[in-house]
Image 1 (cartoon, rainbow, N blue to C red):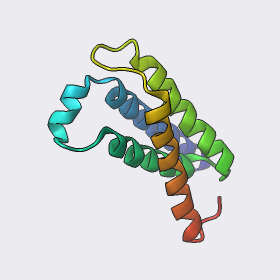
Image 2 (image 1 turned 30 degrees about the horizontal axis):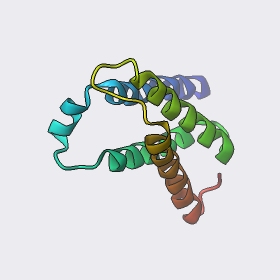
Image 3 (image 1 turned 90 degrees about the vertical axis):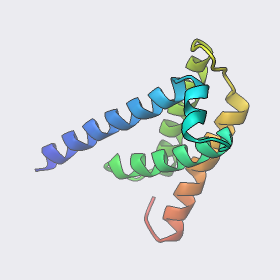
Length: 117
C-alpha cells in the first residue's frame, strides 16, 4: 500500500509540474484571455502558494527549507526557460519574488493551523 501511495504521489507531482510548466511557457496573450484584467503577479503568487501546498502533501517528510528549494527551483527554472519562448520574457526578480512570496505565504498558513513543517 505504501508503494502504491508513493507512485500515485509521484504521478500527481509529474502532472502538476507539467501543468505549471505549460502555463509558464504558454504565450501570455492566451493566458490573459482566460483571466482578463488579472495581474500576472497575482497569478504567480496564487499558483506557487498552491504548488507549495501540493509539494508539502507529496513529501514523505515535511521540511520547510526543502519545500522552498523545490518550489524556487521550479519557479526560477521556468522563468529562465521563458526567454526561449515566443512572446514571453524572463523576469527573475519580479515573478521569482512573487513565486517565493506565495510559497512562504502558504507554508505560513499551514504552520498557523498547526500543521507541522
